[in-house]
Length: 98
Figure 1 (spheres, rainbow, N blue to C red):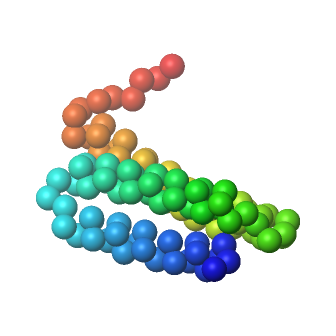
Figure 2 (cartoon, rainbow, N blue to C red; figure 1 turned 60 degrees about the vertical axis):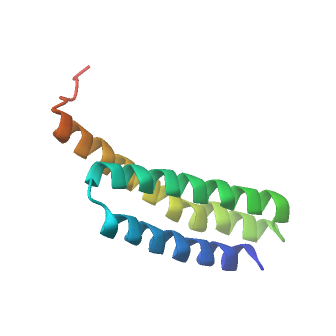
């Protein structure tokens, strides 16, 4: 299986898992935290796959780091910002201005 097929399979499974966690969650903050850990786990698995398999050529490597991996990293950034936002609201934290 090439990197792009593996990635597409991975992103489909990740999105399905995220949808399940969001749908079944009673506690929104806890659900977002679980999604963050899930995304990190998928990124780790993707890294392991790439390290074991390697890239066929430089074009495949560039495509992976420029177009594919950022799709998962963007999800991590998105859910992390939501987590921080909900955490600030829920616990009454104020952002410090330094």
